[in-house]
Length: 128
Image 1 (spheres, one colour):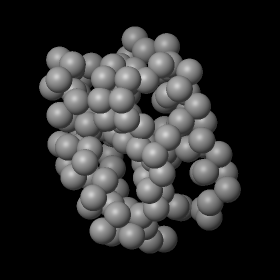
Image 2 (cartoon, helix red, strand yellow):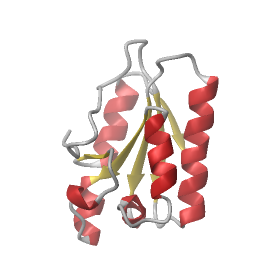
Image 3 (cartoon, helix red, strand yellow):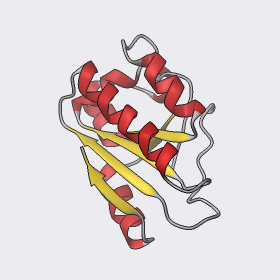
């Protein structure tokens, strides 16, 4: 798994598998904001140390850039230790590089493969 220099990503938490939230397709800023708020709500409700990832796949990866209207919400999610990850295949499709992303946004080579790996590791999967 490759990532932005500012986004260290643990394979899973020390307390076991985590929660993976999948955001796919074209996303509006309000939609991604709601997804990241759901991740923040999960952080508050789940036991301390539970890993939470939001994987963005499709043209919605454009909303993960530094200039995005949701960059503040991304920053807040990262402060809560919610990993925000972009699909590498989607990035190539829309012409983005990891350095275009807001600080703390990481990448995975292929969202579909990452989702499968996390499920095989016992992670809970939610698609929003």
